[in-house]
Image (cartoon, rainbow, N blue to C red; front, side, top):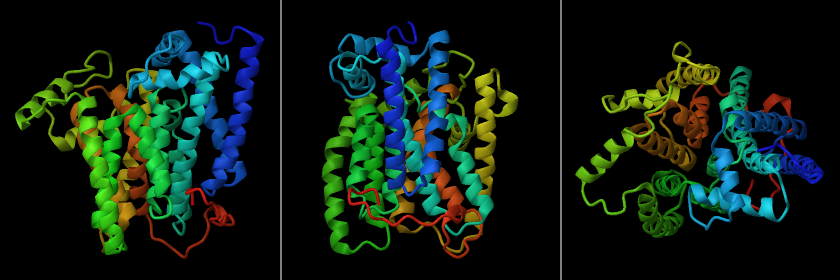
Length: 394
């Protein structure tokens, strides 16, 4: 497959880049980011898109399969097939090339990146400068942008994660945006959407600052939605007719045997839960790297491990635990995702991609516990942008 084949392909890709830039500036303002910061993050993320496309054309990858399926008009189906269905109109209606379609999905990832950075910026106001710089460094990690920059489920899932994180910071005013995040996640990863919904329910049920009337109303809505979504998510995950814990255990053991081929495969069946969780989040480490990609991922993991140490120290020195609906939402979501994914993923290459469906929340929690908060001043000496949006972003 060629990168571009006609002049229209070149024009179409260029048009997508321009429209994506305009989108990034507009969305960046909704997430209270300066224009220069939004522009930089857009081009940073887009650079990884080009790198991903050239790599896939040379070595093969999932994006090629999604594109070829889109050429054949696949039927609508949640999960993998949904990606090809979403890509179909961009190919057949707008005539975009493989590069152009990847640039479209790159825009989804950019929204997630801007939401992630905006959330950290908002949550770290008053923190020491080095903590804020550390948060920005995490946003720039290659593993954050590489997998979310191209045609595939990761770009949409990362966008949903970023929107959910931003929404959780003020769920009362951003409830519509949280519903949007859950809906997007439902399209590509229904089981993760179910976890998002249950985490929202937990934040409403156990969070402080929520009056009883609103708590009961929202809890009822979450329970009704869960009654529909959670069984559907279990069905999608392959647990349709599971009636006992033994059958669930058999399913987990089966999943632990999947994806055991390749340099990233590991045996997790004999690991205890803590070791599996550590392996899922922080491996490979530099001494385990067997390729250039593994080495890049391991350097990212070193920074995450450092952040985990700083955050753990901060939590140990806090007099109060996690409070507020936002922290409870993030905690429940991280624990549920980490528990399920680490128990069923036996390939480090897959974990490097999938863990960014919950790591933004974990990074936020760790950074919020790192360093002592000082007086409330805007980050980077910026002038805070007033929250004037009426669409649920602020």
